[in-house]
Image 1 (cartoon, rainbow over the protein chains, first blue to last red):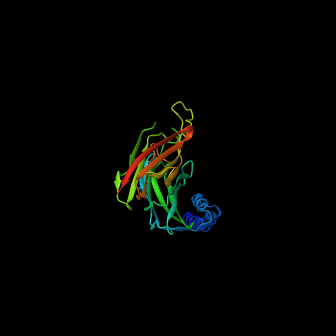
Image 2: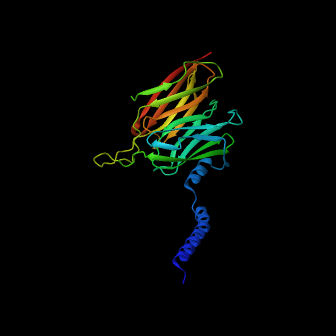
Image 3: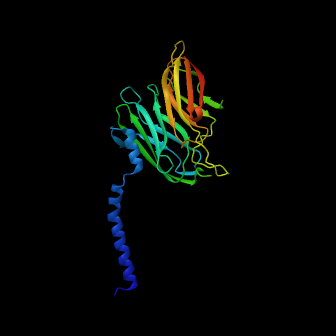
Length: 151
Length: 113
């Protein structure tokens, strides 16, 4: 018969071990909805992290109006040009925030707007290049006052 | 007519990258909120924004500069900022359209030296 202290330490170590082994399996089984959104936007193109910078405050006081800016490092010449930018969220009622189409003379792939955030969540910006490849940047945002969704 | 604020440079050098900013007064009602009486507020969103450039002396609808598809996650009074390269004098034609037949067009002229 183990003492109470031994019993608790056994249970906690075994349950932690179970969690550690179980977690990667469940996370692989459930596809991240944010990743699925990006995949749908990218189509057949490759998805890589980098080149895009999603600028947003990491701590948001008021979720009703949050300034965001998406900057893509690109020479914006014929062969290497951003044709589209999309922004998706994780936990708003709808996963889409906005999709932008950039004309051939954009010159500088910087876009900014103001968005609503329902709660603390991740936001992803995707830039689609003229060759079809996509670049992403994901940011975790903490929201203290949510956008009023059911008032 | 909804109130708009456009920030477009009046004069630019040829080849200069300019920033355009557009703001329109609109509630962007999401369709997920209730009024104080508990009645669901119907969705009223601006769904799309388009900016085209029409060179002076030319006709037609011009060349696409920038367009955006907006969703409920865009704040009330949608603000957009984007860039383009000034290459000729002409007019930027900005159009917002959305639910309940909402559509509004504004123009901004630019002189390129």
